[in-house]
Image (cartoon, rainbow over all chains, first blue to last red; front, side, top):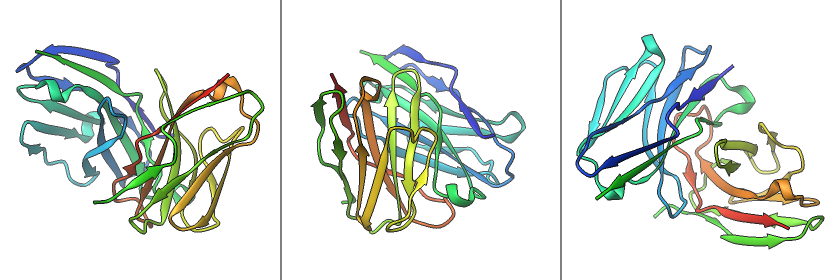
Length: 118
Length: 114
């Protein structure tokens, strides 16, 4: 069965620190997609990144970077030089391409609440 | 700008009342979803729909039903609200077919059942 685990419930850092949010997933499919979403205090989840299972290249977007390792079934998210505006709940999610009737469905982790203090 | 709009940000209802949560998207998406979000439990899928008049149960459909009469609108119905349905409800939509795309979310509807 598919599952996403975000072991860190809450993280608190001081501005300009680097922080890594962990995500471990389980799936029996060989083709799947991994996602990260950000939920700021306003409530609306915002898409950050999608990665398919055949692309293990790390990705960097500004201060954000993602490390995908199939060997450890992990898709970790690092924020470099964190800022107060990064304070949010971050969700990792998994989708299996062969989901049949579940196509389009994402399985979410429980989220990590990040607090960045000035 | 793409948009998923949920009709109410905050609702307070009484036990036993019928509750309608409306969601409209303007992106011509085939897929629409209802999730509920609870502290410590993350997002759990209630129902989803991949076409007009089609619906599929998610992980926690008990106590809920849905309606999709038009492509852009997906309604979540609580036939007889109970206190354990107090939660944040999130609607989302995405393009159809095998899931390669992102979900677009509404701002959420926070329901309190007294």
